[in-house]
Each structure stands twice: as C-alpha cells, then as structure tokens.
Length: 319
Image (tube, rainbow, N blue to C red):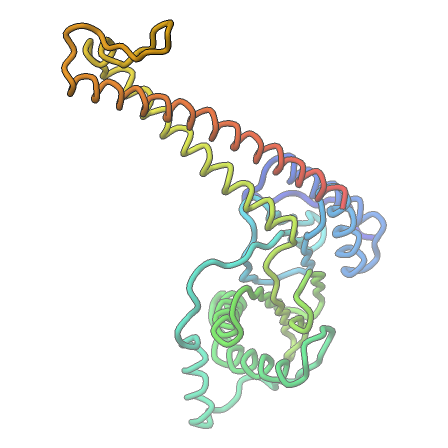
C-alpha cells in the first residue's frame, strides 16, 4: 500500500475546491494501490467521477512535461514520505500558428550524427504501450534518441527534450501534442488521446510519452458558450454606455423637439422647433431606444449562455 500523504503543490495554481478534490482523489487511491499504475488508474477514475471526464494523470518520481493544459485545471501533488508526484490535468486545443521549421536542437543533433560524434547513451529502446503505428513510432523514437543524446548532461535535461520533441511533433503532424519525459522508467501516464497517436517507450533509463489530444467535446462546448457569454456581456456594456451617453448629453431641444403623436394619431411637433432640430431629436431618440433594447437583449443572451455553460458543467460531472 502507498501512503496517503500527498499534498498540493503551490504551482501550478488551481481553484481551491478543485485542488481539494484532487488531493482527496489521490490519497483515497493511494490507500488502495500497490503500484504506480494502480495509483494513476484509481486517481483518474475518482477524479472523473467527481469532476467530469477528460482528466489525464501522470505518476512518477521525476519527470518533465510540455503540455497544453486548461487554465485552472492542472494540479501537482507530492508525497511527503515517498519520492512520488502525481500530475492531474485537462487539455485544451492549441491556437498558435504552426512552427515553420523543425526544432533547432534536432537540426544540431542531425549535424552531430552526421559528424559521427561518439554516442553518450546506449540508446536501448523498449516499447511500453501505445497504439501509434510502427512507422510513425520509429520516427518519434529516433527524434527522441537524438534529442537525449544532444541534451544529455545539461541542467534540466528532461524539460529541454520535452520542449524540443513537442515542437518537432507539432511541426510534422500539427496541433495539439503533449510530451512527458521521465528520468526513470518507473513512471505511469494514463492520458486521453486521439487514436493512433499514443506512444510510450523507454530509451535507456529514460521514459518518454507522447500523444495528441485537444479536449473533450463537452470542454469545447463550454469554451464556446463561455466565449459567447463574454462577447454578449461586452456588447451589453457597450450598448449601455451608448444609451447613457445619449441620455446625459441630450439638450433641451433634443428632448422637446421629438415628434409626438396626438389622440387622432397625427404626428405633432413642438412650437419653435426647426426641421433640423426635429430630425436630430428623432435620430437621438431612435438610437437611444436601440441602445436600450441592445442592453436588454445582450444581457438576456449572456444569462442564457451562462445557464447553458453551467448545465454543460453539471453534465460533464455526471458523464
């Protein structure tokens, strides 16, 4: 049995309630686990039961990551008694432009290989799991081997390899790739991934996990509804500002010269108003009405989108 003494790390930051739920999930799983894989599986099942599907879990003693995770949905926990860390995160699609060239470290590694430099690693490869095709996996393994050879001995070596490998995968195969490099083979990662993009292999003592995944469908719908909510609120505020401006800057003529309707349905104009005064007063009155209508309309839309987003969040928790 593993000890249930995992505590939340200060970074990355996450909402307090989510962090507490993650700590409970990890410690409950630790009490019922005898291996890293059991800990990862137990944590993932408990976290998805309480906070919705789409949680990825990585467990190990020392590993570096290059992930595209959702803001506020990445929690790192560390055991006080054992040299073990648990990383839980949800992913989100990348929006940046694709790189125009391969990572410079790989280009330098190719030059080093061409110069027949003496290898520092034995480069023994073992495939642990994954559904990536053999041809693609071999290419990824070759890139990983060259990067490990290039960065071996550097400070923060695993982070540099993860960053360079993710850049290379993005350049060759598009968004959104996630890369984890562990300094020991005793490591486990249970991700959600696009079919045929997951590879988990070891090179000498190092463990490398790569996979491609944007986000769960419900996450995408929640992102769209949240964006719509913010846009609607912005438009409501703009409409309110326009309405307030027209209301506060109206002159006596603007208020007095607005065309009115008498009891017989005839349009009447106040005495002393010129044609230009009437046209200006009517235009301001029309725009004031449009601005007021826009304020109400966009506020209602924002409220409906907020309700829809909350419904999706509850649906995700029950999935």
